[in-house]
Image (cartoon, rainbow over all chains, first blue to last red):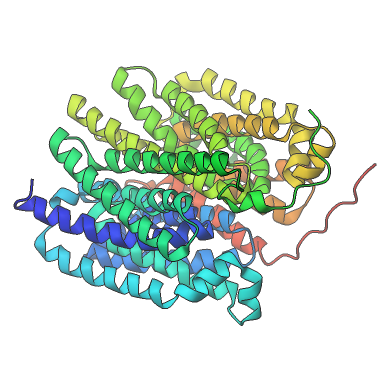
Length: 284
Length: 291
C-alpha cells in the first residue's frame, strides 16, 4: 500500500487535497460551486485540442480553463453568474465534442481526465503538479483579505476600493489554476467533489475564516487518504469513495450544527437565518 | 422543398434517422424552453445542469441491473431533486452548496456504477454516450416516452403557472398571498428533473443544458413577460436544434475526417453566438402589473 506507484498516488492526492481545501473554502463562501464544476469539466476541451495540436495536455487545460474563467467573468457582468457559467460550460463541452470527433483514435486518455487516473501518476508529473499547487495557494494567500472582505461584506469591500468584478475574475483564475493542477492527476469529477464537500462541512463547525480554511484542508486530506486506502483495499474506483465520504462529512457537519442549535437555542450557523423575518408570515 | 436545395445536402429528408432527430429535437427544445425560462428566473441553472450529470449515474446503474436507462435516469433525478430541496436549495445562500453536494455524491456513484459496468460487460461507451449523446442515435421506439415525459414536465409547470411565477419573482409576496412557496418549489424541481431526464437521455448532457438555459436566457433578454419569453425560448430552441441537425448533416462532406461534425457543437455555437449578440440589446422594461 505504500510502495511504488502507490507512493506517487499518496503524494499527488495530498497535494491536490491541500489545494482543494484552501480554494474550496472560498468557493463555498462565494457560492461559486457551479464555476468549480464548469471549469474542470469544460477544460477537457483544452486537453482534446492539445491532443489535436500535439502539445502537452496540461498546456491545453491551462489555456482553456483560463479562457473559460475570462468568459464567465465577462458575461457575468451582464447576466446572472449561473447563466453565464452554464453557457460557458456547454460551449466548452461543445468544442470538446468537436475536437474529439476530429481525432480518429479512441481517447481513453480523455476518459481519464474526467474520472482521474491517480494510480497512474508518474514521478515526472509530481514536480509540475507541486509547482502549480504552490502558485495556486500563493495566489489565494495573496488575495486572502480582498477575497474574504468582498465575499462577506461586498459593500464594505467596494467602499474600500475593492472592485467586486475584479475580485470575482481573480477568483475564477484561481479556480482555473486549481483545475490545471488537479485535473491531470485526479480528474475533473473528483476535484469538484473535493472543492465543495470538505469546505461546506468545515463551515458547519466554525465561523472563524482561518479555522474554517484549516479544517477544510484537514477534511479534504482525510477524505483523500481514506478514499485511497479504501480504493486500494476494496479494488473500487477512488472517485466513488471521495464522493461518498465528502457527502458523509457534509452530513456530519449539518448534524453537528443542528445539534448545537437545539442545545444552546442560539441562531443556526448559516447566515440566512440572520435575515430579519418578514412581517407577514405564510398562511397555510 | 426545392428552395432548401443550397442549404441542405441531398438525401436529407429521405433519411429516417434525420427525420426522427428533427422530431425528438423539437419536442425536447419546446419542453426545455418552457421549463428553462422558469429555471433561469429562479436562478437554478446549476441544478438544471447538475441533473443531467446526476441522471447519468442512474443511467449507468440501470444498465447494471438490466433495465432501461430511462428509469434509472428519472428515478435518480427525482431523488436528487428531493435531496436538493432538503439540503436547502430554496435559500439563495445554500442553493449552490446543496446542488454541489448532491452532484458530487452522484458523480461518485457514477464512477462506481461505470466501473462495475465495464468490469461486468466491458462497455466503456455508457459514460461517453450519456455525456456526448448524439441526437442521430435516438431510437424511434422512445417516441411514447419522449411525448409522455414532455407533456408531464410542461403540464406540471403550466398547472402551477401563476403561483410558480409569483413565488419565483417574489417569494415573500407569494407567501403573503397564501401560496405554499416550498411545495411549489419542490413541484418545479420535479418538473425540471423530468424535463432534464428526457433531454439528457435523448440528446446528451451538453445539449440538455444548452437548450434549457441558452434559449431562455436569450428570451428573457428580449422580454420580461414570462409567457412570451417561454414561447420565444421554445422557438429559439427549435430553430437552433434544426439548424444544428442540418449543418451536422451537411458536415459529412467537410474536412478533416469526412465523418461529420457533432450536432452538439453546432447547436451550442448557434445558441452561444445569439446569446452574446443579445447582450448588445437594451434591457427590456418590466410590463405594467395588471390588477
